[in-house]
Image (tube, rainbow, N blue to C red; front, side, top):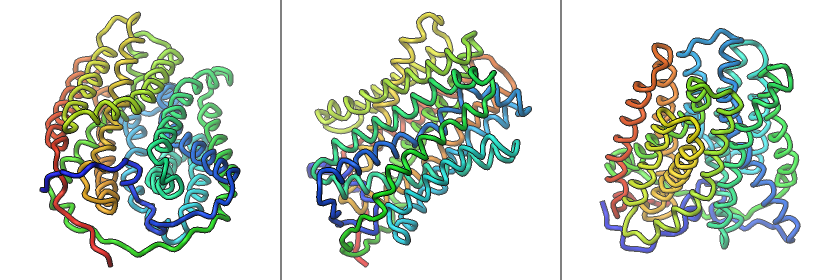
Length: 420
């Protein structure tokens, strides 16, 4: 592994995944078209979490109505996360064939179809729709950073922050409004979940003009080999997966866990919504503070401590203090996620290696992350006591700390990009 002696570039500049046009210059031509592109990016980003966070507040309704066991409920929360890892690496191939703009349009349509399918055809539709939605989110999540880097190169950091805020806002809105919609329809979860196909349709309508945008040809392809044999690349990947596991446990199960403590479904959804909203400022503030550190070990340790403290508070703290623990949990998870993303840039010698490391970390990492929600489902199938969950959370956090201290060192992965 090499010493990282150079100044790291902005995260968005490193995560160049849009392989079809890595040096493209869009023919925007006007401020109006640039603003339309920005609006499209925000609306697309807004749709990357509602399919995940909308299910958790009504999971008890879904399980009671369909007869899902806790283990099957765990599989339902796991499936879309696993699909993030399975289908995300396909994004560059789709982009090279169709172009990034057309790929996103097609996948937005698939996302809306998946959300609607969850409410039809019984258990088959529920699981197939969840898988389709997860696959769509995985593809879009890989492509958007490349478009931000390509079309907003001079303001990539700012635009990445805007995109992250849209992502968190979408998750918070879905967590907070799904139960009220279900109650409005006589406690029917189907229209409450189907509702979140509308933002996807709106994003597709606003994104549609981008299909006519032309870009300059790229300057060639690059090959990165050897990442799977690099210890540091695996440390970054495992850290991404373990911290994501805690995040998707919260997305999938926090309202149900709080309902076991006597909160209503609406109160549990609002707690998840509050925690998610706090992630927005944390994801922007922590990287600024971390920039003053010699390496990423301090922000990893601090934010991971906040996450495990928040999770244990959700399990054991008095219910009248849960708002404070939700805020602490959100701060920790927002900062931890942004730090994990920053490692993809800090540990890479150039943007091409960063793109490959991102694909590895998100592909393998999300597969690992999907095991967390499934484990919670298995545990809840045998016991609703708090201590088994506390043990699970603590073990994941301890493992994340160990690999995080390794991944957070000031090093570069020992591979290079080569033109082909």
